[in-house]
Image (tube, rainbow, N blue to C red):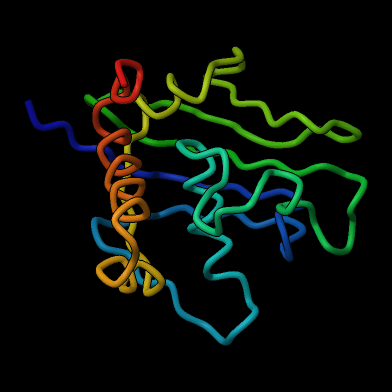
Length: 157
């Protein structure tokens, strides 16, 4: 059964180079543009933090800490619609903590649970090198992609 998932609102707090950013009014297709270093990739990285421990940039949670306020922790909130109901996910690294958390309507959940709520797939220009990589790297990449849609993939290997 096809499910439409629609991001309605995204809020970043002390995330990388952004102190506070709220984006709402998403459409079916969205274009993010701007000068280098303004945070375009950070927006995508913030969204992928719900389904990947290392996000779009393949970096641990501590690398998302705001460059101007490194001791404040960081947070990402996403409001999305799925099955005609509104859902709220929050993730972040609390102040003075090394452990990222994920919450669904205020209750802590696992990475696996977040992936089942908000599955998404992304490709970046870096992924173009995929077809010139070693076989193990290619398997790892596709294993990651399969795991986005089949959350129990890898539990049996």
